[in-house]
Image (tube, rainbow, N blue to C red; front, side, top):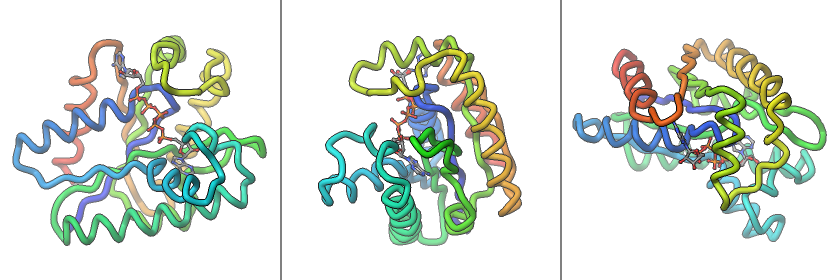
Length: 199
Ligand code: AP5
């Protein structure tokens, strides 16, 4: 059976870093694993269509455009994983439970997306808002000004956690909050791996 898990977290919390480390650990244990970055799938189509030049512009697109990209990404991720992993292995989808758009906070995992992915676990990677703001500031290649205010991050993290729970309810997935402590990526990654091994 293909095990699907979803890694979420506010931009800059380090979910991609933690996921990458978790994959390394799983591979060392001989587990067949694939990571699909939802944003990569959306960005490929958005760029081909000339809608954006940079991935951080996607959340500023009209909601109808974002919805179309989101649906295409969910479908392609499942198709690619089935081709690559068959019925065996672990698929980790790196994405967001909530996105800050000009129309308001928008779910990254609405019904059609989460049902299509059918995860066993939705991870919510967290850190303190201060740690997240500091990580964003160091990560110079990215534009996350709309997520950089510490008070905004505090409120948004609550939104993101609640969004993850709402999505999990639709498919009976577990929600697992993992704290990504400063300088302790491996510790967070091990918690992710331990939970995956218990699916
Ligand atoms: P996405 O593709 O997810 O952006 P991303 O770059 O993958 O992720 P983030 O920006 O969230 O950063 P991160 O938390 O993974 O941090 P990182 O590991 O890089 O999303 C792009 C866009 O796609 C979205 O804005 C949205 O428009 C769209 N999208 C995606 N999913 C969607 C969905 N489902 N529906 C609709 N739209 C969707 O780390 C950051 C920095 O911190 C690094 O420098 C790292 O070295 C450092 N760091 C990490 N952990 C630690 C630690 N423990 N201690 C010290 N430093 C650390």
